[in-house]
Image: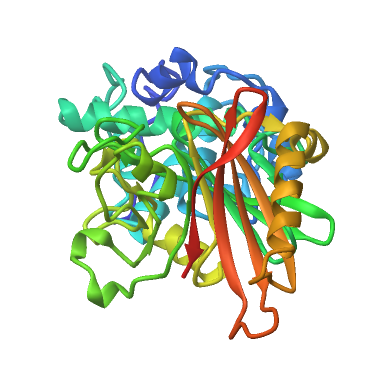
Length: 408
């Protein structure tokens, strides 16, 4: 559909828009701090400075005021999420004609993006009369509440950006053999993708995600919770081998891991996967325990990653640290214990030639843990290298291996 706003009646355009702007007034877009509300480009590496410069303090100015700036490019280009946020900004400036034109294009190109459809319906209805509430042009109920939750999560994640150059505190040591790492912040419904290059870990992108209907901290089969901890992608599943509800594909995780099994945790089939074709995204808590992304986001993520072994940290809330602080957080007692173990392994009768490519990721479960993955290079009489993973736990003043196994 199309909507020509040039000749639309203007008598109500100066009125307070109680629909979408009611959401702004509730505090979801009331902050104009450029550190939080400036949108990062789709690559996640730079903000759109030209657009940020057009963002005055939020106010309900009369749209008929002269000399309005041109609509930001982000309202027409980039990811659907970037465009949606840009349209919210136009509404916050009371530039309803520009917002409606941009939302029309967005819903035409992404008709299953329900959040965009809701905003678009509000903007259409606002040309006839002020709206009584956010989503006033649509039916209420649980679906509307879920959409409100989704927009809150999307905007909150963009308002509170990670500090520049920071990484999750758990990423103690990742060698060059680990080219990417993922961290999921359940409190923000956000997945962060890091590239591990010559200069170390660097945040390169982030995506909105949904987690379990009952939240996080999975314990048992069927509890509809997403597990917390460190997991690894084990493969990728072709969408033709999946039910339609899994969308454009799936990346399975190794839940339950070796430590989960020692704690009696059950369940299986925890995936990073897409959404069915009838929708663009799902509410923040809407899966049976998987981490769910928009199909385009999943495909873009999968295209960057190796087929297996990418670490995926799932946590309630990310504790952001400088890479130096994260590296220094490993307890000296753990490092001494691992060095002793390595020396004994290299001196054993079936010793490998060397232990290399050690990655170390911290995790606090029912005890303090360090998850170590490393390669044992084949020694004399050994057919091939093997990759091992150990879960070290604090035991008083010392550290011991509490679970371990070969990575196949």
